[in-house]
Image (cartoon, rainbow, N blue to C red; front, side):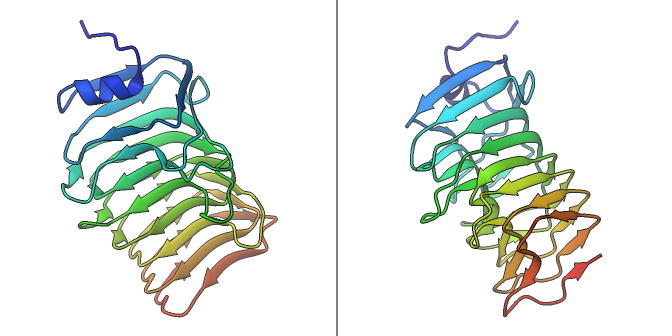
Length: 231
């Protein structure tokens, strides 16, 4: 007995916390607009299918942002959504100050700008930390950074089953990991550019059972990264 909404952003803004949003297959054009879930607002957002729910975005910020730097967001769930950007689009999915949440079967493509750089997925701990989350089956194609874990305190997240293909430039990264500790990456594929780049106190992270395909460098540890384990 739910309500129907004309757009995803209207639904996100209108429903009360702890609601479930079901998104039907279709193409949803954001243009330069964005979808933002306020910090502290717990929702379940579930698409009908990853390849059927397609959000197109041509802006320069983040297409879909969960959380903010002022209030912790917990127990969020998001599944089965794709975002297609352009070369000018900065970020596809952005997670800020999010904890104890579950994200599965998400796809972001064509965030390919090198100067900014384009980021398919961004995890940002500004305002606290983004951690203790599970990210399953993330897909990225033709993006400069597939998963950018930067800012401050992106800790103790689990990533599994990922398929991440960058633009293939020398600066591109499947995982760009800065100031992020205690994360686990297992059972995935990283392709083109650098696979994993750990830097600036990126400590005690674990990479297990991940295949590197046509990478210029599979795993790179810069100064300040220590006690990491790759098997």
